[in-house]
Every structure is written in structure tokens, then in C-alpha cells.
Length: 261
Image 1: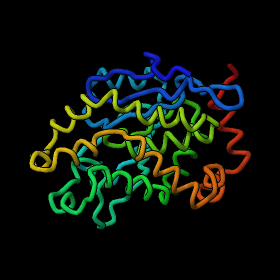
Image 2: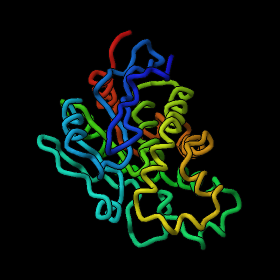
Image 3: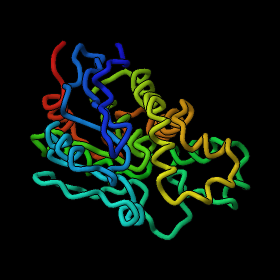
Image 4: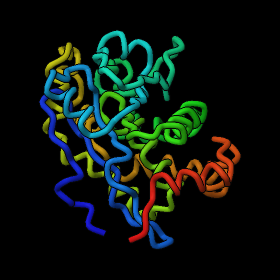
């Protein structure tokens, strides 16, 4: 498997880390179809050409994994013929949440024992947001066109959603981890995006903590899978018991999203 295919990462002016989940080989001799499932970072800065490009890719549905407060600050422009679904993986219910670098505070950083602790803990916690994952799978089952899902960085919430989709399609775990780490190829664009927003409070924080928040590290996605394996035995039990995917629905996803090598 060559994860470094040049047509996986798609360049846009107003977003970053936009990539195709196609081409990955499965354990049963198939591969994920190109042009059916896309993942990306924040879409709020898309220009007219970007929006045309999204439509040219055949996208008919966008699943926004961000919370309500993020949507209000960074709204995605409406695009003709594309249905938008708000599917918050970490709902904003008034609790103290640290989903991305812009959420960090001095008080919170001071409580961390290690710079990467926040995302290790976040990835463990994200196993509970099964209602959101179920909704994305419903969209994948229902849509005839391509589906795009995203958060702010296109890294953690988007990363676990990609991991679940690839898992249900029988892509090997090591390749799923590679796909998660592929985000680091877009680190410069991610940092540039952060700098374009109100981030003055970030500049005074421990640089190692901010860097850890911006990177995709193996221990983050492994924390997600370890929590699933510990609580459910394996990811397939999690799909069935927690997310509620039936065997028939899994087979339909295979029919829609896989092809023979």
C-alpha cells in the first residue's frame, strides 16, 4: 500500500488537509473507491473557485463535526446542490472542552502533566459520541454522491471518523494509523489557518503544548482504538453494539464504497 499517492491530498485556497479516502486496500482483497469519501479541515474560508471544485468532486453532502459555537464563529458557505448536516462529535453543552488549539487557556495548560495529554484524553473520550458517528454512517448509506466530513483542523474528530469508516471497510489498522498521521503533511497550512484567526491568547502558551495540539501523533489515535478494544473487545463489536450498524448496513457500505483490485 502506497499511502503517498499524490492524488490523495487535494489543494484548495481556502481550506487544507482536504483528502480522498480512496485507494486503501482491505484485508479481503478489495480497495476503497476513489472520489466517494473526502475529509478536510475548516471550510469557512472557501472562495468561489474552491466551492466549484468541491462540487466538481461530486460532493453532495457535507457532515460538519464541529460544535455550535465553532459553526457560529467559522460558518461554512452554502453551496448549491450540497446538503449540509450538523453532526457535532463534541457538543458544546457548557462544559470545559478542549477540541482544538483555539480552545486552549493558560489555566488548562498549567494543569497538564505532558504536552500531548489533552489529545490523548480527548481521543479516549471521543468513543462516547456514537450518535454523531451513526449519523455520518447514515449519510454514507443514503447519499448517491460523494460525502465530505470535517472539523476545524481535519485531524482529531475528523481523524476518528475516518478511522471508523476505514475500519468498517476492513482497511488494516496500520494503514488507518498512517492515514491519521498523513495530516502532518498539512501542518504548515494548519498553522497558517490558526494564525488567520483570533489567536493572540495562543502566543503566550507553552509552545510544546500548542505544537502537540497541532500535530497528529500515533498515541492519539491509538488511545481511541485502545479505549474501544478495552470496552468492547474490538472495533467490530463497537460498530454493532455502540454505533448500531447492522450486518446488512455494513454490507451495503462495502457495496457502495469498495471495489475489487
